Length: 232
Image 1 (cartoon, rainbow, N blue to C red):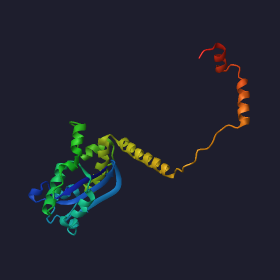
Image 2 (image 1 turned 90 degrees about the vertical axis):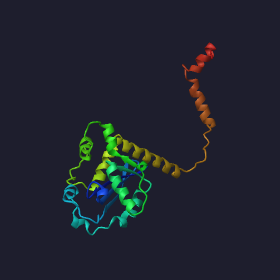
Image 3 (image 1 turned 135 degrees about the vertical axis):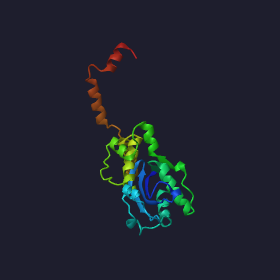
Image 4 (image 1 turned 45 degrees about the horizontal axis):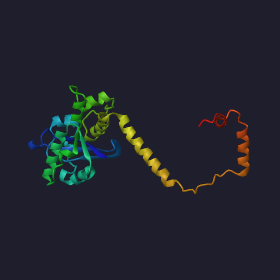
């Protein structure tokens, strides 16, 4: 099973008010374990970045001005996420921006059936408790000390660990990996196993005589008692 843990950074809160995506971060997982493949896209929003937004993610106008616009990178993004479920924390926010951007380039929106919202998962599992990413990292003992700013790729990497814990913990992922590993080992052993003709194990005449002498010397043998009593 292939999933993409995803996060975005934006210039503001609402694309309908002219705000845009400036970073997309993606972490690929297979069977709930990171595959090692990631995608990070910085995107020129074709507008200024408000100071209050920069205070959150640290991305400035000078940094982003020479980056490609969304229409130049959306194919790369769609190719990376193709066929996978999207795992997103507070998915309503990110999907609102992603589908707005896709609409501007004439592409169909990504349906909600392809999305898993870890914020909803956390609220269901821990009702009444803080459910933001920092709080969940603290709850599960996940090191987030490098998170001085919100960054889409870093947050996706942290969320991939949080998601595994929400599913049942690290052992859940290890069991899946072990099962896959044992299955692969068994397949490899079968492929390497050579067919051998059955060998004949018929006793020799000397072996039969030796066996008969040994049996006769057994005083307390069960079959001798059976012969004496006539029981069956």
